[in-house]
Length: 122
Image: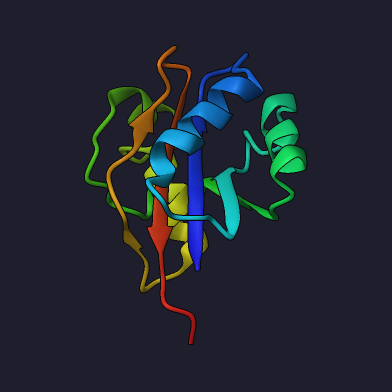
């Protein structure tokens, strides 16, 4: 299973989220989208969910904070207790044996980040 995790700023557009996803995919196709629970109902994220037709997971803050990420953003650390919301959301949604396919990717307008995590299906 491959999960695309997202971090994004308030007011992000669906186009920024979609661009971050396309940049992060690198030939992989996600099975699920994920983001922080406090961001999951944003209009832009819900538009992305609708457009992709993929299920999504809203990851609770405590689960994000429990994950160490290779990227360390001061803003993400302050707001969500983890170095990268995108990386932590992807890893949390993919499960305990998940690994990142690559560090997070940032949209060109710097409003959205996306990281892909993978776990082998049992």
